[in-house]
Image 1: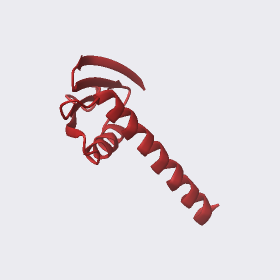
Image 2: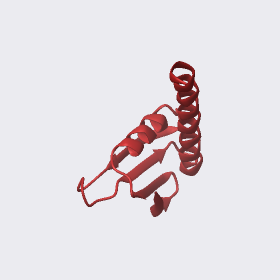
Image 3: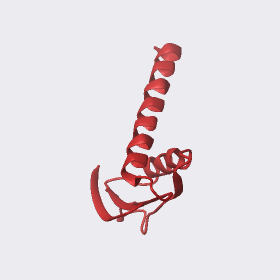
Image 4: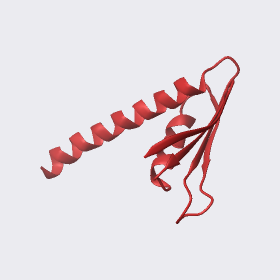
Length: 92
């Protein structure tokens, strides 16, 4: 995956996730929406075969969209590691 920052303004971040489809951005949006500092998080994929998802994050006044995105990514990483541990415990 390659990240391309399309818009970086105070409290607003738009990032293109080149090489991804629906799975990762969907999980990332879900993690972002768990953050009380996030006002809005969504993504769009203009064409499922040729497009790249664009992720939109808007945070509350005085908060940092970069920090919210980083925290959401770290949460996903922890969740994936927990899943891997449980999976290996059940199926070797």
